[in-house]
Image 1 (cartoon, one colour):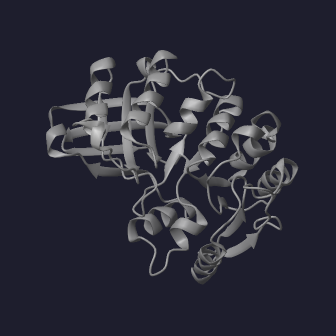
Image 2 (cartoon, helix red, strand yellow):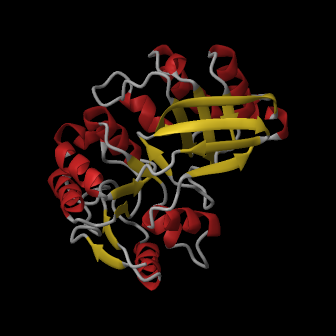
Image 3 (cartoon, one colour):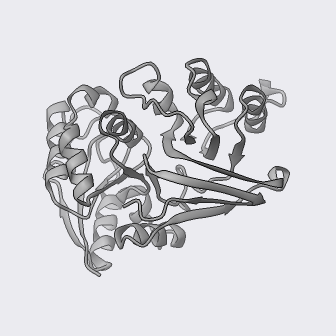
Length: 304
């Protein structure tokens, strides 16, 4: 089934142009109609064009009428655009059927759109790092993206670590939201942090040492975000180096600390983050979380 895909760069400049071009070619080879934003490869300092250029690219993505608007890459740049983003146009496009897809720095746009309009966007792959890999893209990532673009996806599931096996089934209903931890911490205290109560918050990050992860979690804790959630789902936290003076302080230490600070359950292993095997998740959709033994499921039905 042919779908239309719009590719744009709202954050950092594309450094690996070959990867993005491979991703574009793969999406075309899958039979989709692909349109690349005219500023997709723009460069202004570390950004994909100056602020006005990137704002215009977001506007063009919203006006494209595409089935999917997907970013080339994350990086940094969207938080500085939050006061000027075309929220009404994005929400209108989402309601019309455009799935805005991305991760990492894209978390800023997603949660700001949720706070401003309540519209649903999708945490998922980027063109370069996911579709542009050398070799074949990850099967699970590609299948989840295909489910999204064909409007067939209704949920996802994964297996918890043995230590997290539940002796009693756990269920919760709430708004799914979150994304990159550093961005979520940066949004705390701003107008663009969604005021979600009774939600299901998911978090991931990359290049952040566990002590920095804990520090960002304390920001969400002390700002009152974590205590209002029904559950916290931790994805992958990757690409950091331990220090000799950690003396046993590690990521599990942070997870244990978090569990001691909030009443909501904390589940790990969510297949999402800066990793090849990632699912797509609807930011702002009402979902049901079900955990039995080591099996965890997040179901959203037809949130597209």
